[in-house]
Structure formats: structure tokens, C-alpha cells
Image (cartoon, rainbow, N blue to C red; front, side):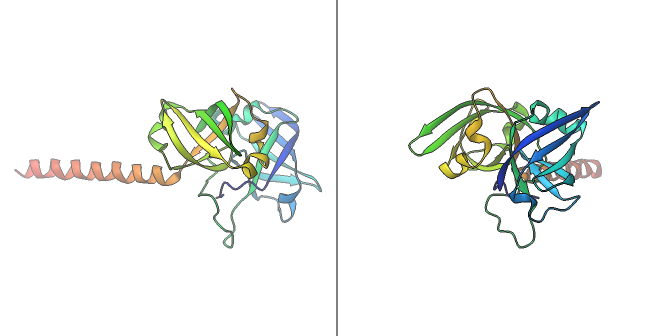
Length: 211
């Protein structure tokens, strides 16, 4: 589990693809402070496992499923990635609960500077529409942000200067593909509502049968 508060950006040293999977070697500094083999690291919002590390890098395997559903399939040597270590019990939850389970990818339609802030407009898949609401949380490449507007499968977020300068957003351009993860609470609410509807239908059928 993560918070969506990016600790640092890393750079792809190498990408080794084998069949439908890949191994990434990523340069970094801060997250290596207490990194251990098997630890989880959010890489552009994707939860990966550190399988090896050195004084200035770590390596992670990427499965075919992750490659198929995330933007990691498009990265190359030199790509800049957002990095965050997993939560500990003593961590402050500064963003929102992020699982690192990317649900799909979006497309950056526009990045506009608005005073000192930035507005980012993202086109998203229709199947995510029911989970994206104004004032709701969303993870973009692992960054915890708040949706401020939704129109025709495009949402808008406001980004403070600190977040813009300390994540890979400052390298993004129109047309770039980004990873999206909606708020897990929305999915739990949906499941509960669907279960309740099923229960109500079952009760209705039982009552009709008794008559």
C-alpha cells in the first residue's frame, strides 16, 4: 500500500525484455536508504518488487499482465519514473490509499500553467468513468491528486509547483500515456451496492415464491 506522495524520481538504466515480461534497472538514491530484497516499490504507480539493488539502483521484474495494462510497456532507457516505497505503520498518510494496482492508462491532453499552479487534463477509458468524480482522489503515475472537473471522459487536476517540479510531470507532454488508479473506496462502495441489490432481488424472489 502507498500514499501517492512521490519520494523521488528515478531513471531507467536498462530494460531487458524476455518474451512477454521485462526486467527494469532503475537509478535512484533516497528510496535505497532502507530498501531490502522483496520490498515493494511503486514505479509510476505500479507496485513492483525489488529483486536486486546496489549503491545507486534497484531492479524489478515486470509481468506480462502489468506490461499489458500499464504504460511501463512504453518506457525506454532514460525514461524518468516516479518512485515511492510502501507504507509503514508509522507513516503519515499525506495523500490517499494507493494500491499500486493500475486499472488502465490515460492520455495527457493538455498541461497549462495557471498562475503558479498547473492544470493537467487527462482523457481516460470509459470503463473508469463511474469511479472518477469531482473532488475525488486519483493516482496519476503514482501521484495522489484531486479531480476538480470531469467532462466527456476527460478529467482535470490542479498540481502545486512542488509536485510538478519533483515528479515526472514536468517531463510530460501532450499525447503521453500515463497510469491511472482510481480511489479504492469507490470500488468497495460499488461492490457493497451490487451485493445489496442482489440480496434485495433474492428476498423479493423468496417472497414471491412464498405467495
